[in-house]
Image (cartoon, rainbow, N blue to C red; front, side, top):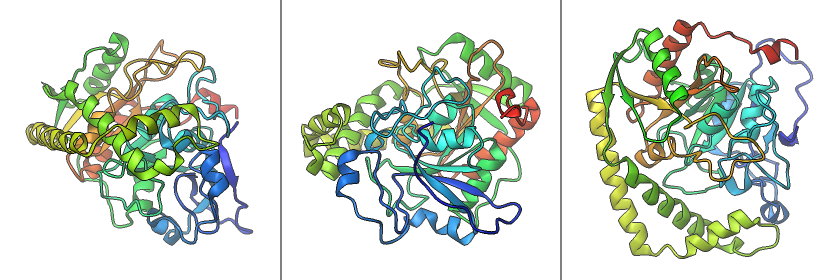
Length: 382
């Protein structure tokens, strides 16, 4: 499987309980080249002179970084594919995409090669691979985890977040990113159920069943500005991609998809970008108002079962995730029992700014209520 871009030898004497961490190769590690999944970047790169700031807690905790993981080129595609470095194989459903752009970190966790994966999430790049690989992923509040030393896609949207096999593991990962962080003492009291057009009915049904089984109080909510978020977010991502990486336009070793994004970003004028930022502020206010009425929002992570590797073009992977990047709020994705589906559906919980503690407490409550097996069947025979 094409999970790793770099692998590192374990310490000579590995103590019991050593946390194994897989780091997306968009995050600098001292002495190691950061490729960002791109040949052009790899060929121009020199070893990083320091760790990215988000690794400080990992180092302080004495965790072992097992390697740097594959990602989609420049963190751009949410599918998880990479024609040069290889596409990691989804261990839950090998015929389906692993999700991206943090594909390698998710697969390393899902197949047991790491306890915690670190990824970046600009439009869903932690939550989407978590959903595809039936694990848990947390997108943190924008600005909470420092991004210094992390390859930028769109700096006003980029976040760092942990992946793990269960919510407790994600909480451990959050403490590696912010050592003083703790889980809230109670779960959400009131859940706002958000329904978006175009979601498979079978996915909606298992989401509803999970919330009911957990005994949570649920109320229907609406976000009228939802449909306007997509153009706003695309404008910001493409405009900031161009401003950060215009030197890579038409460069040897840059793939067609990314190069097309750079060309599109060049067309984003300063007034158009400013208009998108104004629309973003209005959306942030709308989401904050909704979260003033309920504790968390609940909806699926993906509109349907993850698509096949041979047929993912046109699948709206970021449809249910990207609007919350635009809002800047934290969101957790977790698998739930889904009889009859080839990959478990993924529940997405969205919290207020800096509400990661509440999201994890609520996720733990749901996980315990559903009595999710600790090991999928494929892992029992690994």
